[in-house]
Amino acid sequence: MVFVTQRAELYTNSVLLILIIISGFYLRCESVLNTEVVKPLRADAGQYFMYAYNLRHKHTYSHQAGKPADLESPVKPDAVRAPGYPFFLTFFVDGLPNKRMISWILFSQVIISTLTILFTFLLFKRCLPPPWSLGTALLVALSPHLIVSNSYILTETLFCFLLVSLGWMVSLFGKKQSLWSGFIMGIVMGNATMVRPSLLLFPLILVLFLLFHYGWKKGHRYSGVMLIGFAVVLLPWIGRNMLTLGTATDSRLTVNFLHHGVYPDFMYEGAPQSKGFPYRYDPGAEKIGRNLSSVMKEISYRFEQAPLRHAKWYLFNKPRVLWNWEIIQGQGDAFIYPVSNSPYFHNPLFRVTHRLMYMFHHPLALLALFGCLLAWFPLTRIRLTQGSLLVARFCSLLLMYYTLIHVVGAPFPRYSVPLRPFLYGMALFTPYVLIGSIYKNRVPLPVFEQAK
Image (tube, rainbow, N blue to C red; front, side, top):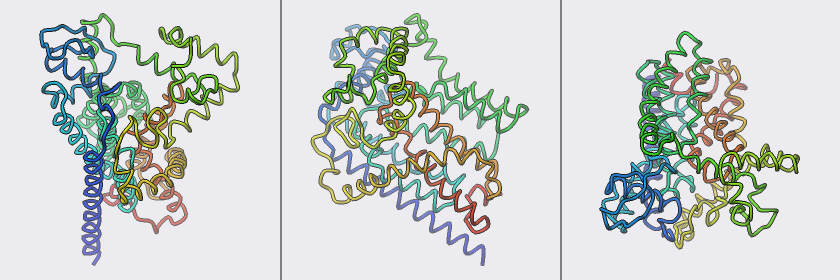
């Protein structure tokens, strides 16, 4: 009888997961097909495209436009942006930009974003029972930010997929530790870093975490092979930069990241018209953003002049802004670049799901904050083993790491979009733990625990 019940439950969960994935795929396809982005290759997107074009057709990593149609015209190599996303685009950039090419890029992102729903479920089923992990997958499927991001030639979709893939690898490692799985963790983390370098310092934190979780005897071996895997991906890029440019990295984006975060509430001297782009209104912006030293001097000077105002901005308001719903620098709402049409403007299904996700966003963010803290308590009393805690604590570390990174720099909400699956998972982790602490033997176990 128990066996029949388990089979029926497994069948039901499988059907629900398939329905969630199909729903997420439909929403993403509809969004991409019916969203019209104004100048889709503007700003960052244009740079990513030129990197891919020059890499494929001129065999040079550069974002210079030069004379794109003249394959013999030289371009100057650079390293302003990490090569992960441009390399992904090279599979589609077979000439000058056209609608067919852009459509293929966007559809590939729909596939990747749909796989993210599945991988989110596989990740969180290690620390949450099926109803809760299915709930996390449903939130990812319905998230307007994750749906809309597929319509842009930007890093959000690919980076989100790689982060969730990294989390899934950590969950597999928690189930069965091996040197090979640790090595693959490093490979995936390296690829994610090549898409967004903001992850660069996270391996060091993960090393400390593995040592804390497994002790020195096992932890140093696992963290060692993880760092080797990470280095296998990262070192060729650093070597290329040293040989071509004479430097390991280009610090321009780092300087901009720090510079754009010095303005409280993202306004220049409180001027509302400067909201989102205060550096464009600051007459001293060029001097501040000259190099790393100049921007650090400006931060120090601002704290000396108005310590309480900037302490409030850095310590309290920046985390709040980062996890806000509204994309500050975009058209508004979940849109990064302006759009002339979107299903969210008129389609009833999109409007209803948008309203629901908007209503629940701030409560979910608050629950995720508590979940990140609860993960570090000894929760074995509610039948969570060390393997499950490994997954929850990894997600907690990732969210706290990115919050801290953007407290130092610019906390544009766009940067938090790829972290939404972790936000939703840790939000549902909170009520599961609280219910489990009250009804210790009456709550369902995660799949990971049932396997034990």
